[in-house]
Amino acid sequence: MRTSILLWFLPCLVFGAHLPDPRESIGEEPAVFAATNDEITNLVEQLYSADVNKASSGDITLNLQYLASSTQTSSGTDYASQKLFSYVNEAKLFARPTFSRYIALLDNYVKTTGTAESVTSGEVSEQNAFIDEVFRTSVFSLLSNFLVSKGYYTSTTSFKDDLKLMWFGLYTRTKGPLDSSGFEHIFHGEIHGGKVSGFHSWVQFYLQEKSGQMNYLSYSANGPWNGYPDVLGVQFKWSGYLKSIGSMFVGTSPEFDFAVFTLCYVTRPDSVCTVKMGGQTLRIQTYTWANSTYGNNKRYVASSYPVV
Ligand SMILES: *[C@@H]1O[C@H](CO)[C@@H](O)[C@H](O)[C@H]1NC(C)=O
Image 1 (cartoon, rainbow, N blue to C red):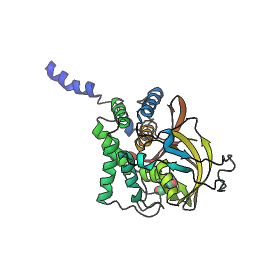
Image 2 (image 1 turned 30 degrees about the vertical axis):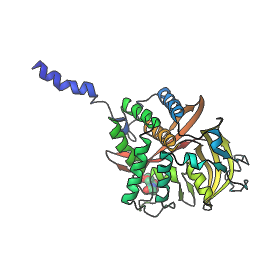
Image 3 (image 1 turned 180 degrees about the vertical axis):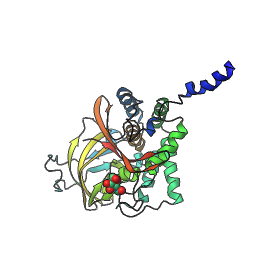
């Protein structure tokens, strides 16, 4: 009798069966912060050190040109006649597996909202290949171990499965067609309501500039980091549409951007996540998509980006 009662209670104690799942508490209930601010800050320092695929100083040459004042950022004035990226060592950086898997995803999207995204089986394979590749990096091992150890996920597999839905799951920004996802918004960029929405990837910025779709106008913020990664606030027109204050890491690997944006999204949804890179403070703003859900009432990524 005693033994059977003990056996009945033991799994509850061991697996914390009655603890609330932090991922289910977004919205109605107060958020459960299973990870402390210090733990998040320390983890990002570790990710920063572990980002072996990032650019070295000579791999990128930036041409910042004009520093816009806060009143100039929304004017749409082209203060920069030259491109932002004078040089990127594509042969070295873009040959790295996480870069090439990321770049392969960029032609999968219709950038203007209002048109449903069609996702072919080939595109799903590309998404899986990207996710598999980032999970091979030490940046993602650190992130995955952290989220599992803090109880956000029960295993690496459950984190990986949720990551795919959270970032690639489709939702509608125009009350109808499934025209958006967190990945498209942040890592590709969208045209919505007559302006650029999202777009927080330096690689995509560089590629769009190279293809003639991007007109760099000015910068409004340049982070305190020497070399890469750095963080920039920029003004630009993409296919003629204005982004008055865009922000992005520069020189990071795709897995680093993906890890930091995911970490802050999962642990600090709909708020500002304050972290450090090399001792210098950085803030990441995250938003959940409140209009539709997946799984057990979970929310898709609406946005996650550096505050400048
Ligand atoms: C999302 O929900 C809010 C609140 O119900 C609503 O005002 C808004 O129009 C919705 N947006 C979309 C794109 O469905």
